[in-house]
Image (cartoon, rainbow, N blue to C red; front, side):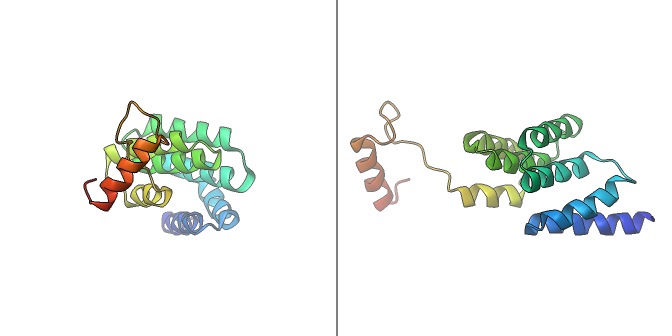
Length: 147
């Protein structure tokens, strides 16, 4: 296969993964993986593995290896965060997304965080989040547009 064809298949695979067509993405990315090895490709394949087959642990491990190879690529943090969300680790996923944003302003990460609806910190940190005083102050501050 020519490099142009591989690039086209890679783009099709990434687009399919982003749209949620996991089986198609695995087919396209698998064809590219036969000829080319890159951390980005491995991260997308790992995401497809987690989303399609539920193998979250091995997928997260693969993304962590990709992060070790390319620590300044926010795409790995995006995909690892998505895998962590699939496994039910919302807090870890949010931390991972935020680490990715510290590297570069990736709009896909911003979209993920926005969709998650990250909560604002409690007004009185010494009290629990669901304490009536915190709830009342939070609603009051939101009404007055203070925070």
